[in-house]
Image 1 (cartoon, rainbow, N blue to C red):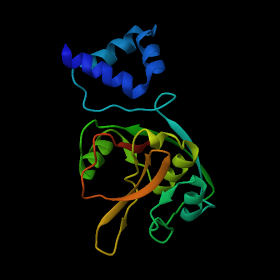
Image 2 (cartoon, rainbow, N blue to C red):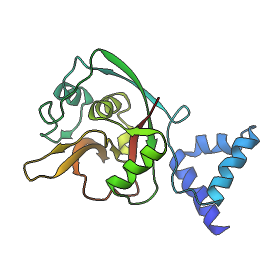
Image 3 (cartoon, one colour):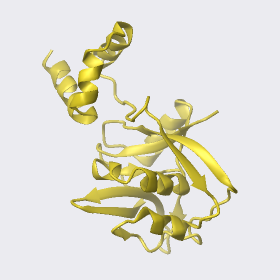
Length: 194
């Protein structure tokens, strides 16, 4: 019972007081019951997001990676985040619905990739991450947002993947060595496969 109460308190902190109040006062008792059962069973992950867990974005492939970084208005971005290191292959304007996967534990890149594959998801790409950062600039202040769908191998043969993070009043775009584990606070940006 204590663990369940801790899970409920963690959920309230995670989704906010307003959404939590809406959940527990919902007339949809079946949905609330299923959600409560998942808490009691100790679900090891959950999807976080507005509007049913999705974040719609439109990618303009007429923009370069460098332009997307500028439009993201970051206080700092890794200088290796370039079109040379992360070439784009799309054309036109493409609408995508993004969602978060939070595994609620420290995980390796391989564990996240396996989870996404097993659940009909693919990892978001750098352009999806950059447009997400432009469209929803405040979210990265809450937790790191990772896009495992794009990577670059640096001069020391380390595979690097992009992620967004906020520190105080700043918003930053980093490249993380994918061989390191990801902290339990990280959210992995994903797209549902058709």
